Amino acid sequence: MFNSLLILIPVIGAQVVGGAFSGATFSEAPSVEAIDQTRHNMDDAFSAMAPRNSADKYKFWHDIISRELTARDVTAARGFLMAAPQMLDREDVKELMAAANSEITGTEDERIALAALRKLPVAVSERFADATGSARNLNTQVDPDEDNADVTVPDPEAGELADEAVSPIVAARFALLGTHADLANHSERWMKGDRVDELVLKITGIGLDQADQPDALAESNIRALSILKSARRSRRITPEFNDYLTDRLNAALPDSVLKPALEEAFADLAITKVRVQRVRAAYESAINPKGLARLETDLAQIDRIGTLTDPSAAVTLIEEVKDSADLRRVRLIAEAGGDRSVALFKQMGPGAMRVADTGVRWTRELVLQFMGLTAAGLVMFWVTWSTLRRSLRRRPRIEAPQ
Image (cartoon, rainbow, N blue to C red):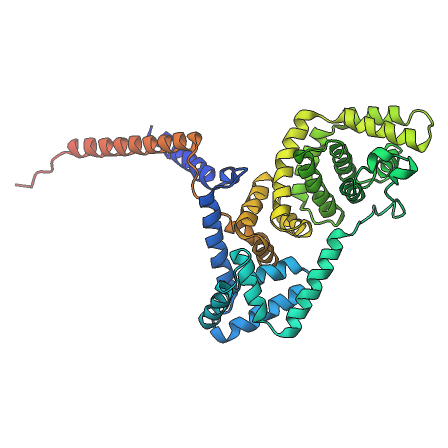
């Protein structure tokens, strides 16, 4: 029994530690306590970035913001502005907080960022203002499909695919994900064996199908799929997360159903409008509702990350993600820090994941494992004590020589 317990206790202990500190403790919607603890950890991380010498703190902070502005990353620059209280020395922080408290509008982070911006030289402030305007313009511009740059959104007055151009929002959405004509062209190339990114193809297919469902969930899915498509096309997805997404997308849009549907769509010659409608119907019929529901749990996390920051920043944040647990970690960090989360990841890279902290979440399984570990420890103690006591009783007396 003793030897069995020696083997059993480390196994149970490893399960308890793994269950307490693995990604399973990161829920789909983080608690207020987890957000507060993660924000506290972020404060410590930003404080650790700055030099220990007070005289060097301002220069380091100034240079790091200038670096992000040079890289045209406005969100990261704004994040470092918000982190000024943790990165500057005490005297600067006192002046900063006094200026921030004098503001009457905006959130606490926004007031801090505005006050911090005033501490920078005028030239840097102007660069920040210019970069902010450029970023706003980029977010409103349409980025056409790389292989179909001349594709335009149909004019509803022309009577051509008028159902796809019902509003400016729909038009922008289709331009972001591509059009059904793009989808038909790429699908035909895929069926002919040409080199086509299947992951992007399925992201586009699911996104365009969601566009036909004008509800809040569909809008959320479209935003998240757009972020994923941007990250994939810019090659900013880890191999592990790429494999994970491939499995999710294949479950939502299985090849065994999609390929026969597309073969039927391309079986007969047809005009462009008819061919597009057939491909549209093929993707709609091939979607697996159960697989899509599992994919939507991840899309909800990505959409929330994009909402808390912005779409381009969301690509930066998911760049280090490897699985769904990492995705929930990033969502927690974004909840706790907003734009500061982007600055954190730009500076720390994968190490920023360690900032996410939910504490120990006592699930039923974890409680049972801990009880089992306690019981095994008590049994081992009892066996050890009983064996020791019996050995002491049976020890023969050694009489002194006469």
